[in-house]
Length: 57
Image 1 (cartoon, one colour):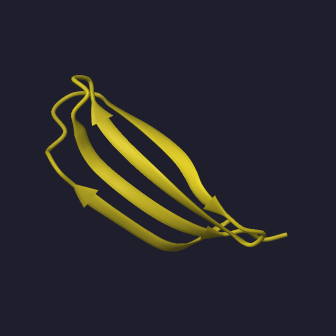
Image 2 (cartoon, rainbow, N blue to C red; image 1 turned 90 degrees about the vertical axis):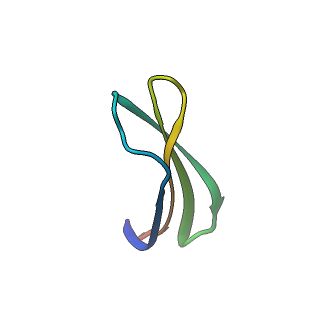
C-alpha cells in the first residue's frame, strides 16, 4: 500500500500512554480510506487522522 493522502489533527498534548483505533470507512478495488482516533488513558481524544491509501494488486 502507498499513502496517497494523510491528514492529522492534534487536539491536546499527550501526557499519558496512548491507544489508537482505526476503521476503514471506505474501500474500493484500488483505494481505502481509514480514520484513526488516538486517545489517552482517561479516554480524551488527543488526535484524529484520516489516510487514503492505494492498493497494489
